[in-house]
Image 1 (tube, rainbow, N blue to C red):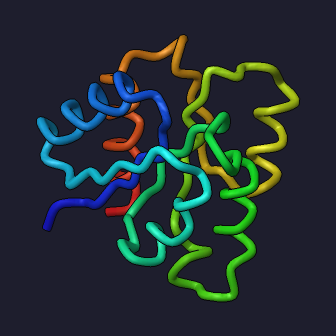
Image 2 (cartoon, rainbow, N blue to C red):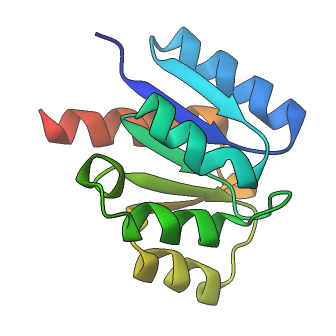
Length: 127
């Protein structure tokens, strides 16, 4: 069964590039662009991993990450989250890790292939 990824990203071009890369690497990828709708989508889809931008319309990635990790439902709070952002200062990285992000990937410093590789590595480590 294909691993299901939820990408929360408001930039259409970036969303499409990642959708193509993950699809070509045999993942089932679902995308959403609005931060306010992310939690509902997570509850509806129960992805195997969430790739989460920080700067989003209506609700930022830190708020979404906090909601995921503070959920009373284990099926939600146990979902691994990788932050995927262009914010690269140490304070943001520390905040994300403190809130429970497993990884923090700076988009500007990594190609989409690098992100796919990081996700592959994560899933391989679970097997």
